[in-house]
Length: 500
Image 1 (tube, rainbow, N blue to C red):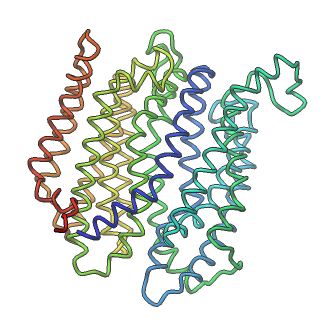
Image 2 (image 1 turned 60 degrees about the vertical axis):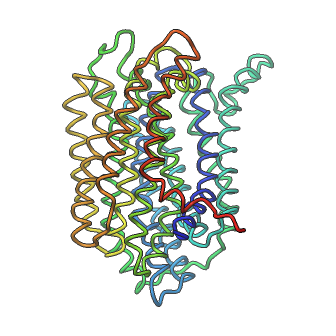
Image 3 (image 1 turned 90 degrees about the vertical axis):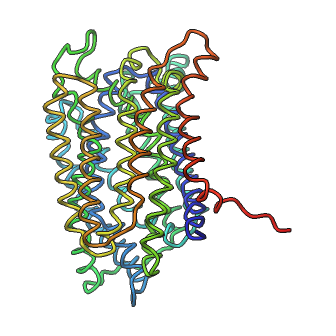
């Protein structure tokens, strides 16, 4: 149990910067929905879906390979870091140049004629992200929590301030002082351009600091080391591509599949903006999963040599499901006030009903991350490709089949169907190669009950404000009571005993 407490503590430390920083960044959606039109939000959704997809290509599974080989027997962590970072710098130069040169073609394909500069900026954002990936991973592996947190927060605060400057303050300064923004290459009618430019500048400015805190390195490639790392990471590349397809494809394809005038008064791109904005509410769950991943991935590899590690992994999964189920219910039953606080405009509330589905999808993604430790430890990463490929195929099939019929609901169901399939497949194969004694009965009970209670509270409506708040949160109280009753013995282990 001390190891479980240790992981909980590491999750809090490593995840604090992610949750706090992403929460600050999440507040930008208030600025976007208040100052930008829905078409700009649709463009933001589409371009950042592309960035999420290409980020996987630029890093091609090397983060996980770095953890695996740095913690392996008879390995020199410094040499692993040097070779991995050197390889990523070289590949980033090639891939970044390729995207930069293809910018005019991407602008035409994605229906942004005359705006190739958007995709040139995208190439630079991708390049900066890639050369920061391994230094950030090294900070996690070395347990440099404060350095990791500081770098993440500085980056996000820079991004927020630059967004506020470009979107909120600069237009006012221009009007009041008659600034000629065109002299700086800036146009008054920009929207998504400001978002990309802010991201680009924030990422570029943080590179020297992260490299310094992670430790500078000598450029060098150890072929004897990189070959097995490449064999390990290649299936993870395809897993990542399929995985990001699962996560982002609904937002990327939504505007192109939704029939025009499906929603009265909204173009397909504007409806995609509404759909993407509601994903931001579900990302509250993803913040917790990301925080958990920061701490858990290096933790799982370090603990793998312990003979009791399977039991530890089962306890981690159980605690994760309990916490995230509580979070899913809490967000869902309070969407009636959380949603309007972040999404300014009544048009966005029309899609609030899909948020519990998206939350459940992200929760299952977290379950899949827990389950996936088996193929990372047994070097059976080839299974990761098949699991995520099947998930991606289902995601695309549901989108194509259901979005033209059910609109927002069809897009949300594609996320849920995808991650549910991946979770089942990963569990099935994992128990064959690396059996882990999961508490299957209770885990499934909490997931199903949590999802059902989320919608029970979501549809409760009372005129009295206080009574409405109490009744909507009643499902959360009932679920918490059930957890306390069924898990009382386990919970006692987390309560420090008093010394007489």
